[in-house]
Image (tube, rainbow, N blue to C red; front, side, top):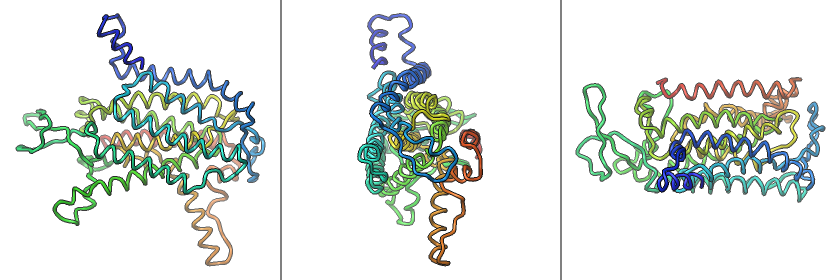
Length: 413
């Protein structure tokens, strides 16, 4: 909203300084600052409100050191993160931008699902919370909304090199590379970036090439399938990672910074051409949203670091995972998620392997056996005697390494 106000003041009155709102870099910086200030200043007030409402965490005794001391710590603190994302985005982003609209929908949608889950746990005294099938259903519906919009919305296109003659009516652009020239157009496409491959691009339609001529018209099915898998996996991965103070929050902030960098280079014609990556028109506006996301996570970490004064609950963790997944899909970097979100993946796999191995050995030997002392894997390290702050710090370091590797893949082919 401030973007529109200052743009109007600049166009109508030419006020000095109002033109800076045209720059994505300036609005991103303002988004980060506002989000940080909001979450740190109003976070304490919300924590007091949660205390007054007796919105405390119910902790099961799993035999972990210091675990029962967390009994009664306010939960549902994810509300702080959601507001820290939504308010700066509404203030500084172009609200007619389809990518921004989709990210706002994702934030609210997943926040509501998480809030319902926390509400059932806290106020209905049901430790199980919202049934898993309803969580999955909510994630699948969101994935379908994202995938369907990206496939059909006219403003969601990518710049692709074309050969003449072409039947597409979108404007042609001429580019020079050395002594040769080539043409590009903004086209509807199911292309995405893929790491470690020379041309760095992959079309989902290729999965259906066995169908023969005309298989491209069924690409939507494959694209929707991948979007569903990515949204549900990352959202649940963030939820599982949120097990000890500051782990999910700090890891998500690192991922958010990386996504901001990827969105900037993908939405900037000069950077995209220099890096020889897919240019996505209008996607640069997502950097403002990423700034708000990072600011909200870092601001929340003020209260969520060890010893935590508040937990984000599913209100925050499900929303964070959904945001990361949707963001990566929109900038066509979703195939980088196994690297970038390696911590989430590691946590997810630790649970899957632990449960699967336990069931297998119980069926085969009549007695369930475990790979880890406890899953998710961060609890395994707690059982081994590591202090949770040391575990969190080391996971953050791993997250930073994975983030750097993710950015390096832009040129590592």
